[in-house]
Length: 255
Length: 375
Image (cartoon, rainbow over all chains, first blue to last red; front, top):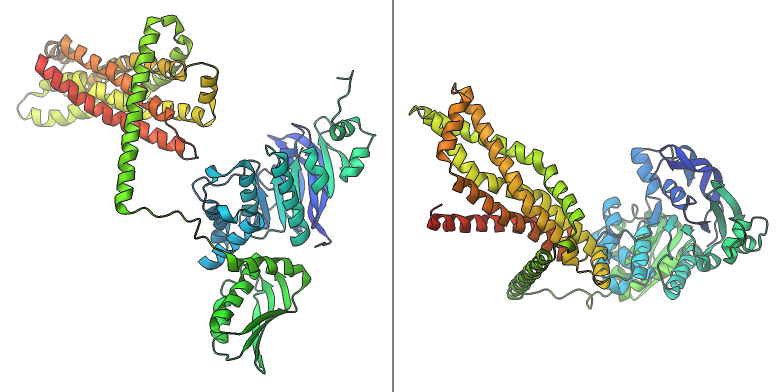
């Protein structure tokens, strides 16, 4: 389901902790319905950018505009309304350990809608079916495997039918088959339901499969050093860092 | 946002047509089914047609609504139920919601236990746990004996750090509580004693009760709340992070490595803190007595003549045992930590509860022993 328009716009963002920017003057756009990958080595500011985009940290300066509303300047109720339009699946899953998988998914529906119990139950079941966990609805998060936790987290992120879903390291710690299944699920959801995905990762294998467009951050540049499709970046010889990253090579003789 | 969905029912030959328009989302569908179902039940047609031409938005809540509407129609006895004019962008979700008809939890919901089974299970859990507790107590005792045979193998640096955290850092709270208990007890006792002109004998009361009972008991309870829970949380977190497994695999006995230093530290700091507690409690009493006009030396003489060295020694002896109990329960409960986010919380709670219960039981045992040996 292809859509047109901008889902997220990041403008001149300076982001970091305690007024010390880790990324400086970053601007980019995420289009509706695409799988947008934020890439980079360890410590380049991927997670910092991610936390800013989901409103957990306020930018030092600059704006993050989600579906035409400025998240950076929003506060209180207005901010919560914007946040309800996005879903976030954290790296560890962040499922609530005292609730079953089903209750985890029902929670946002119970909090933010007036739907009847049976509707909430059915919607949660459909989300579980989408991620293939309908047979594990009554397990506790501690009884799930790593891949199942990630899928349950994705189902919870989708609970309120957000048009944008943020995923932090979806393939980290998964075996290649589970990781490929998850990649397939992401591309499937993006194409069939038109959900926009913003994925933070450094798994080369999944980048090729899922990404429509990529931006790559780098620690020393404190910002974006390359942008484009995975094919474009793979062939890019202009920046040795990008080349080494995509081809898993190291500079010999250089520090 | 007042863009609530609307519906219109028309009847055409043997067909009832429901035309739905607007946004079919979680807000819009919350009461829609109820409203629609009240109207359809009155219509007496053979077929039901759901017209979705004017639906501007449809999400999972909307698709679920459509599925519920179809199921409702079936229950009402409509022969054929069909959807017309479904926009292609909504078809994925409406197709997905068809799966709701196969929704079946029956094989997943765990069987509920009967009353007798529940009681039996909790009784067996208690027995298993008690067995574990006894096993660990044995293991710890053995590790302690081994450590005392080879004192160089004890991790003294760790022991000192624990002693500082659980002992020196606990001094302010032990001092505060003891001082206030001494003060309040002296004050409350002085009022009735004054009627007999016997205020000075409050000193005897404070002296003997602090040294024999309250000093050791209060210190032990404060440490059970403060240090035992900390031990349980530390060791429980290590258990969850697989650090204890890592120690075992490296061939390091976790009991010698983690528990022995804590027990040694706790055994030595509890009596020291108790001495402080005794002193501060008596100081609290002194404040009351001096404020009543007696010189502090008479308070001191009164206590010194009444409280014997064996009272003091009896109190301190208890503290060694309390010290072992506090550290051992904290460590064992931490060691028993299961997995899950609330596991460490459960362990710390159980450490404090078990610690206090054991302190109370052992205090009773000591009272009986002291009574028979005449201390």
